[in-house]
Image (cartoon, rainbow, N blue to C red):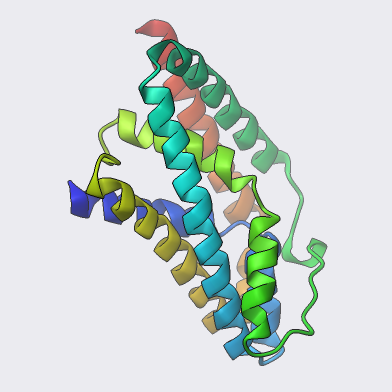
Length: 205
């Protein structure tokens, strides 16, 4: 189960980091400008913040599991949130060109910039809270004991590897980041489907 938790966390985090945002577009633009070293430091810092935010998320998830009355209502809320997030992605028109970033950073300054932008992106907390809740409810992950750390490592490493992929692909990532079907429609329908599925399970069972 430990290996499964690591693999599932990695895959979900890698895919979940694809839609264009300040973090991955910053890495892309640094790569295009030839600042690949700064981009690596930036990616490392952003992944470290992801680790911290993921830890907060899982701890809150564990708290909810220990309070079943609250958890029942929260599962309904997170199902609706997934549906809303899915619809937002489906109708979103954001592309890499709509994200404005400062690309004047060099070398290790990229690490500090990555920390700052990472901490300014707390919306990852509700997203991972919803995903974590349903991954565990369906038996795909285990966040008890050592599984807690394995799950966090999987999420952080998934984000880091995606950012390394962006850094390596450079300008080629623009074609993906500006493709609304790949970065918005596909994740949107997946999130919408998950939300409807889990809400249906709560209502019907």
